[in-house]
Length: 454
Ligand code: F0G
Image 1 (cartoon, rainbow, N blue to C red):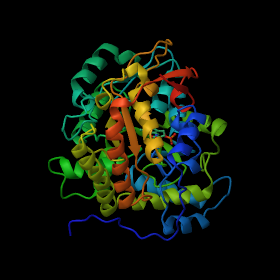
Image 2 (image 1 turned 180 degrees about the vertical axis):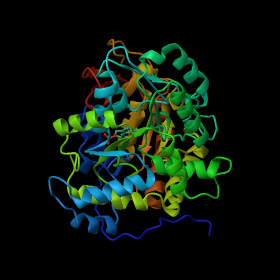
Image 3 (image 1 turned 90 degrees about the horizontal axis):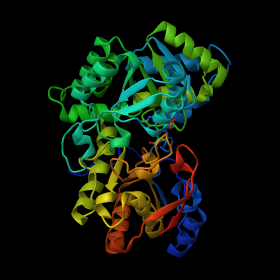
Image 4 (image 1 turned 135 degrees about the vertical axis):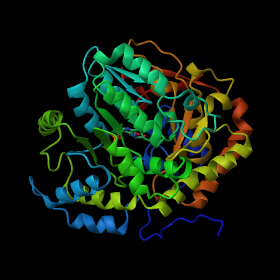
């Protein structure tokens, strides 16, 4: 059969609320033109994030009842730890309430004034946690990764030549080398196994730990299976194991490929680092066998990790993005190609050439999508990354709008509706005007900034 259907049937449903265009105009104004400030009940299709927004399976819900809520030594922790080790066999598995807590703990130990951390592209919370310690977050993604029209297979790869050069010049200040799979801030593009291995080799040659931000490890493994020579006959699980076998540790938001609504972990092989991380964990998250989570959350993650490596699920998930991208491409809407794992990215800078980067074309499109169709998305561009640590502002490398697809939540007709909303926007695009920021916090401004129309 040609149609790749949703590989599940629906047991429990949640209604969504319809609003009129006029209502949405008022609601968006009340939210100061910031989609993060909208109420979710006023959103028809919520593509703000794929993080913690997915549907859990019947097996996950039933596993939650097994949750043992003991403060210490709970069997729920043992099941969680075993499920993580089955895929990522690190010596120390330290649960956290979500990914950024793992980052905060890691960089409280490895960061600090004068330190430099290379990555393909730091996600905004990673960058925030690095910079918060006074360290510098350095992005070294391959040039193809910054060209929305480049059809290369692994646009999330680290530029190995630049990494080598960077290490030669800065090794003394580098506490670890990172890579983010998939490269969220660069369009959800995958990193090849060959690139992961070569990055690890460079890190280890300079005697530095190699840490993977593994948020979307299963989606990355699916792309490796599809696209990397010699990987076609291997299971997703084997590819995932090979991926993490290269690393000395990982940070993880289980809200993505853990298939849960909350949770994360920090994993490390080094005993001394792990000792420091657990001391920090006890101060900020909780005892090392629950780390900011309930026992039932640990159970849901353990089960989720067995489901996310299912190839039928991954095929359907990636195909949904491809389907939307193919149709938007035909409409003439510039999209980041090829399709990434967790989201469809619109190249707003190319679609709105009359709106300068410092007038936020991405935010402008995000507002238009909400008004026209009740679709909530987020800008990944100059609003998110344009403000520099010294307080100045400059255009981000790209101005994208992300349509993040929650896992197992929406169906084919939702995808068709999204495309129809773009059909309408394509007729208005020339009239869209940019925005200005009227109020912003000192860091991570995209969450709370207030905008006005120009
Ligand atoms: N790393 C990456 C690559 C991420 O995409 C995220 C979260 C994090 C770390 C932090 O994890 O949210 O559990 O603290 N990304 C979400 C998003 C928020 O919408 O892309 P967290």
